[in-house]
Length: 572
Image (tube, rainbow, N blue to C red):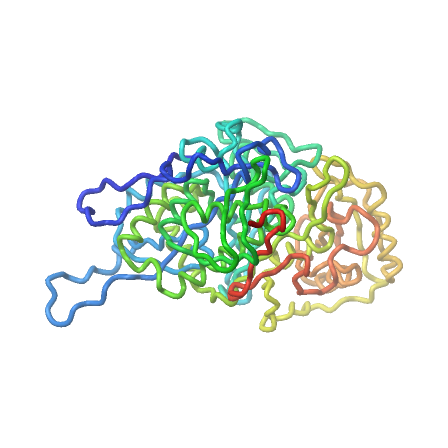
């Protein structure tokens, strides 16, 4: 990542307030524990807590002074092309909140600040979005917090000297899903110590990272060519198309949090995140609500030791609370109304960000923020990927929870709001051609459970075919010639007159109708049993449900009573 955020040297801005240099923040006490979640990794060293928590940036409302009465000595700025110069200072956190910003900025200078990389380094093409009845499509943005210790500022803030210059880790990963109708926003955090298989990634320099044959921590994806591999890893696991990514490092978080100003957070007891052996972020707060900013905000976002059970799950919850609180603060209209502060934040944000090439200008970032601005705070839902703890050598690590995790991913793929307010959603239209009697429907079942790291699960096509036969689909057969792997179970049909029959197959097995698709690649109804259904039994997603799993720990954006539980061993 880039070096510390510096001061503006542009002439004519002598009265502009400045963002503190990130390399002047923080004392000698290191903050980066580097452990990978509950189990720790090569970054679990003296010097403290969490390698990574980056993210955030902020948007704002237009804050220029009202025009003076009578004749003014200044002309009002023209609209049109100059409007492009407005910067919403949004990026990450404000992206989430979407409050627009104002101020006439130095457009090309800011564009040059932004670092750009490829969207995906995987070799699997992401599926296109399915438009709703109004022709609208959703937007999915992956926020990545890098624990890079590649500059003086990042090294001071991150600590753990033995990791200086090491391959960075994607220690914060959050997917923002903006609904097609722009009525709601869903956020899914993936714990950094989640164990999964990595897809094949090809770095921009041509180096090929083969698919992993064993489970590894998700935060290692960033070291496999860059953020594009983190995107590919998310797509492999979730099947959710990702439109853009935004990545930020330690210094970027501090500079932007400092520019935004104080954000209130709450703890239920005095906390000092520092243990006798040096673990912890250094965060020290009194019981109750405190307004934090700058380096203290980074400490809050990185704290693992001291929150709840000292795991990455507690940290994710604290991050959700901070982000929701920042949204509420900024939407009160009490912050970032000073054009000078907006300009400082724009400088900090553009220098701190690495984005995909589809977000390579200030105008594109502004336009994106305008889309997020449409969502009311009460329709923002933060969640964490449902998970279970590993055992043995992976004790303390987490794995996606079968059923619940896929259900959460499916809701996002299908554009179902996580806040439960889906009453206005239209039910899937019944096919124009109704289903034939199930005994007359011919279905070919194949085993597509193979992955990059695993061969096909033995006998799966036959087992699913038996389920269909037991449900009355007597013309079911097994296609043993095609074992090409697919991530998710799907049902294909070749023409509209077979749509009803294909949906009948899906309903019989509990497969979501969104996974029934028309395709010219098949001549009849073809069911591919995917890697998401490697074990016998019912399909691992409850039939027809649109309820967010309780294990996702959903938190609403208007919940201002949330307070982090402090671990008794870290009180003072």
